[in-house]
Length: 136
Image (tube, rainbow, N blue to C red; front, side, top):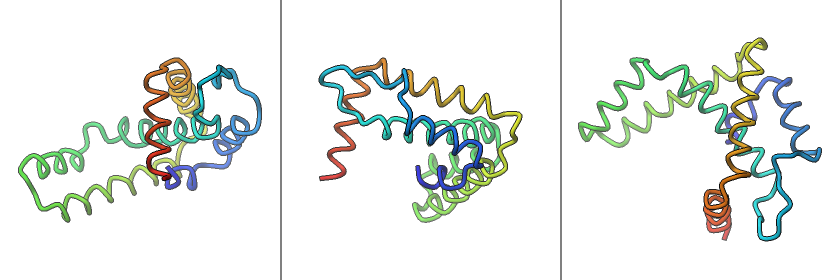
């Protein structure tokens, strides 16, 4: 996640900070819901970057087709990791160059993910359990 958040245009980071610092309707205050507000926002922002700058842009790309083919063919893990790293770099660079006129699309994806996290109790609990497990 930090790969994408650290290279986002300032205008998108300002929106991220607004969500981190100000009350938001996407963060329910129900008893038993313990996923920290900031964590949900950062996760939504990172996943939106992956979707908008990775999945959507590279969906029909030759790079992803080659990577999938190598994986299916049982290719060398080191080669697959190197090529996957290239895909992550392409995604990061796409975010760096994210056009301002597309900001509303990006922020809509962030909002959709935040709403999914807020409304899906099972997914919410699973995510928070995974975060706690990794931190222990």
